[in-house]
Image 1 (cartoon, rainbow, N blue to C red):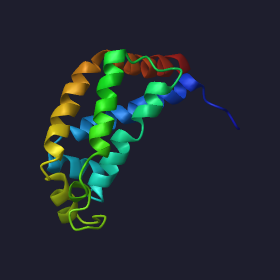
Image 2: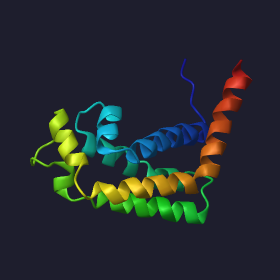
Image 3: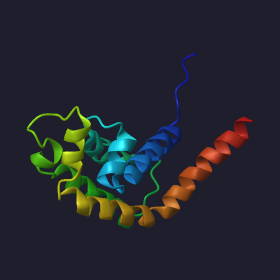
Image 4: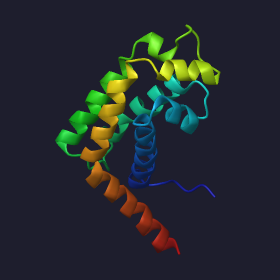
Length: 142
């Protein structure tokens, strides 16, 4: 079977995974490492949070308000602006728990954790709409 998913379904799935990454971003360094599997956490976190923002905002199925989109773009810029030592404390990709913890304890992550927490509050209507989409999908298929 070669079914193509709709733009709406693609958006909702991408949004679901982005929101999951945003929830991980607000955790402590230890919590982030545990949630991400203790492997190259800083780089993965940067990619998982900043990577989908622009595509989500520009998607034709997007329903972010202008204020939400602006806040998301601010987070994207902040994530992409992390200093190298916050991503690669030993100058290399960190493949160990110790390296991941060292990276995630860098002071540059603290304001991003707070920003993620604030953004999740701002996105509460979006979170509810996304959850309703999946609830409807499950109920509709059952």
